[in-house]
Image 1 (tube, rainbow, N blue to C red):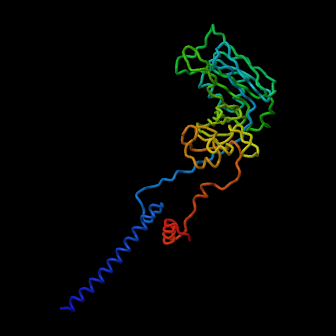
Image 2 (image 1 turned 180 degrees about the vertical axis):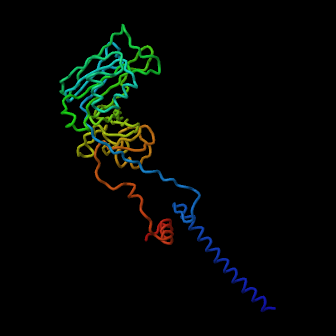
Amino acid sequence: MVAVLTAALMTAAEISTLFSALGVIVCLICMVVFISRVNGEEFFGTSVVHVAQPPVAQVSVQKVAVPFSLELHRPEEIKFSDVQLKIKSDVTYTFRSYWGVMQDHLHSLMGSPWSSFYLDLIEECQLSAEIVNDAERCDDSSRTFKYKTLSHDESSPLNLGTSPRKKYPLVVCMVREDSPPLEEVDPSNVGALITIIHIKDTDCQVPTCILHQYLKQYSGQLTRLQALYTQSNQSSSNEETTQDVNDDTKGNSDVDKVDSEDSDDNDIPIEEACVVCQTNRITRALLPCRHVCVCRSCCSRLETCPMCRTRFEAYFLVSPEDEEPNDQEESIEQDTRSTWQRICDVINNTLFLED
C-alpha cells in the first residue's frame, strides 16, 4: 500500500512539474506577443488593414516665354464706355478687340490651326461679334506697362442676352508680328494672347473681371492661363501656370519659373520661405489648389495643402531642387532579420538593454 501511494505521489509531482513548465512557456509566449504588439510588430496577423497612400506624382512642366501681359486697371470703375487696360509687350504686336462675341464661335476659332486662327481673327475677321474694332499695329517693346482705353457707345447697348449668356462682353486679342515666316518659326513659341473680359451691367451683377486668358502657339496648341497663389496673395505674369485645353485634356506647363539663386538660408525672404519650416526656399506648387508654399522636405511629409487643407494629388517645380535621395525611399528599408532576431530586438529595446 505504501509503495502504491509513493508511486502516485511521484507521478503527481512529475505531472505538476510538466504543468508548471507548460504554464511558464505559455506566459512567455503571451508576453512576447504583447510586447511585439506594443512596439508595432505583427507576427501573427491582425484584422486591421493599413492602406498605404499612393506617392504624390510630379507633373512635367515646360517653360514657355510669354511676350504679352494684359491686366485690368481699376476693374471696379470699368464701364462699357471706359475700359482701362494695362498692357505690356516685349515684341511688336497687333491689337484687336471685339464686343458681344459668341462663345461657341470664338472657341472653335481658337482651337483651329494657326494659319486659320490668324486669318479669321486678325486679317479677315470672321468672328461672330456685334462690334469689331479695327486692328492696330503697336511697336512698343519697352517691357513696361502702358495704359490703353477701350470704349463702347452706351446709347446702343450690346445685346448680350439673359443669364446664362452665350456671348462674351469683350474679347481682346494680341498677336505677335515680329516672328519669321511660319515655316521657320519655332512651333512652341507663343503667337497670341486672347483675353476674355466680363463687364458688370444691370442684368449681370458679377464684378468686372478677366474670365479667361488663352495662349495660342504657332503649333496650334491652345493653353489656358491660371494664376498661382503665393503667401503675399499676389499673382503676376511670372507666376502663372497654363492648363492645356486641347482635346478636353488637362495638363500643366510652367509659364515662367521663379528665378532662384544659391543663397544662405538666412538670406531667404519671408515671402519665399516654406510656410511649414520657414527655413528652406519654396520649390513646389501643389495641385489642384495651385498654392506655391512648400519646400521638398516638407512636401514629402504632407498629405494636404498647409494653406487651404485641400488634399493635393500632384505638384510641379517652380525652382530647381538639389539632387537628394527620396525621403520615402530612405524610410522604407527591407527587413531581412529572422523572426527570432526580431523578437530578441524587441525584448532588448523594451528592457533598455544594449546589444
